[in-house]
Length: 113
Image (cartoon, rainbow, N blue to C red; front, side, top):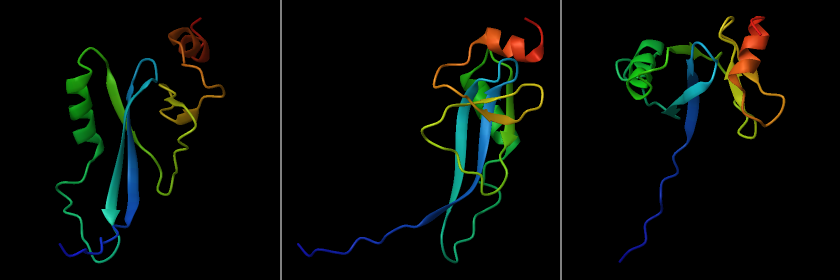
């Protein structure tokens, strides 16, 4: 059996979409859209967008109020960090400690606790 050289596939991240609970800011899903380097052109109809991700995530989290944000271009998520989305400003924030964000913490941030 002949040995064939595997073609290396080089991918670039185009963007990130974050689906989160609109009440607590808990991140429910992170979607990373990637493309192959080179002359490859993405079909715009199959690329993820905010509305598609909201619909898909809402099916998985039926009892949650789902919202979606698109992160700025060239934003890099740090795998060792945990994140949450401020439900008021819809901005992504790093958690300062590696603990889970509690609902009471969100209420404190909103000034309701």
